[in-house]
Length: 202
Image 1 (cartoon, rainbow, N blue to C red):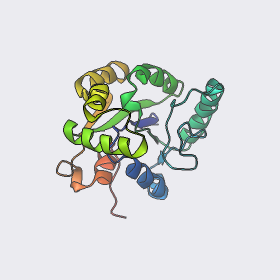
Image 2 (image 1 turned 30 degrees about the vertical axis):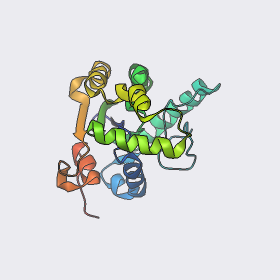
Image 3 (image 1 turned 60 degrees about the horizontal axis):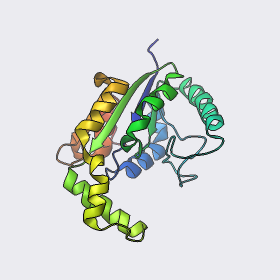
Image 4 (image 1 turned 180 degrees about the vertical axis):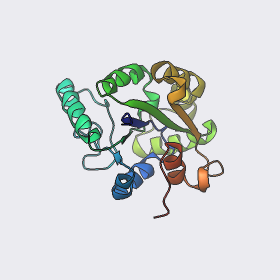
């Protein structure tokens, strides 16, 4: 019997994560044919209740430990019915302090853990993220001030080294967010093939 496997998609932000999450959610029957499941958390910790995307450990909740205990039990239950469990949280990549704690959270489940991340060229990422920032908030920072405040997020070397320390280099799959580099020229196909599943044109 093969050991169970968790595939943790950690973003990065502005790399098609919401579209990928919706794709995985809507193609659940085809994933099931390959004994894979896209997991939707019991407790949505971000601001998207009822949506297929969710943020793990992304809130300060007075009942957080209780919620996480519930989540572990549900993860175990779902994993007992599948071979590959896919988790996705586009915000986790930038939460460097949570890498080790999140691995400890998942270690309560007897499964191998692989991490997949899409990285976008830095200047392109800055422009896209800045546009989202000014649409969603009153302009608290100038563009230059905002770049200074967020420049650590695109220090990919530092962040991936911390990931390797937490999960092991052999379990990290780094992908470039660029149509020219996607397997079959398609983000969805690239994700499915990179994590070791079979791409089906359906």
